[in-house]
Length: 40
Image (cartoon, rainbow, N blue to C red):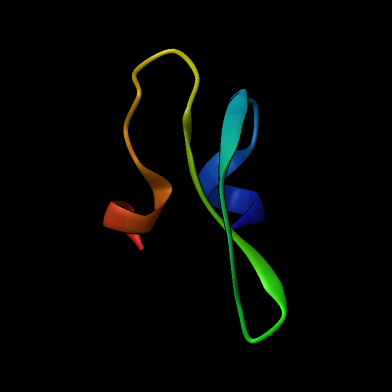
């Protein structure tokens, strides 16, 4: 993940729900909008 995002700005948005007592959200590169979950 460090190598993938090095030098990039990443924006994350929480969806307002939890899974296994953890916040659920999506993260994407700020400049392109490409979803990190899709890449991984």
